[in-house]
Image (tube, rainbow, N blue to C red; front, side, top):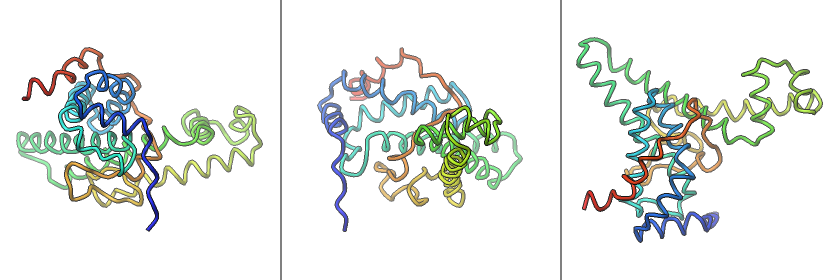
Length: 236
């Protein structure tokens, strides 16, 4: 069996500091990952205020349960994204189920279709954001700005063959966004793996390689940070 790479030193140190209850560590974690967490939550939930609330829930969970992250299983960024996705899908399913009950119409198939769509959209956003920069720029020019091959090549300062190569590779990566379509609600993982049996651990997989390209481009409100720092004291 291949030996796992050692986790980054920053990840190990951060987990240890959080376990000691260092409020400054939570502030650093928030500064680094708040935009990622909020963007992923917003993509799944489709509502800024719901994403704000979920962002607070994610960081509160990390503050109160730092032991739930195992540096030996993958990067902290991967774990944060997986945790966010899992909680966001759970929140979406609960919200939509309540709406179905109130309305007295609709079906569980409609619910699962919406959850599946949100999961695929989040995965696609996540993949695009952390593609190698040359691939991401090529996709942005060709598909978001509607440039043809020649214009894309000119804007990037590369040959048309190179522009085609970058687009082809980018699309190959993006096509994996649909790998989880058969398992709605599961976080994106390498090879389409879903959530593990252990609720706290989630999956790592693709989150170790790709990042968020969120439809929401801002960051959560800063005033929430003190609430996260004080979480353990409030829940003791």
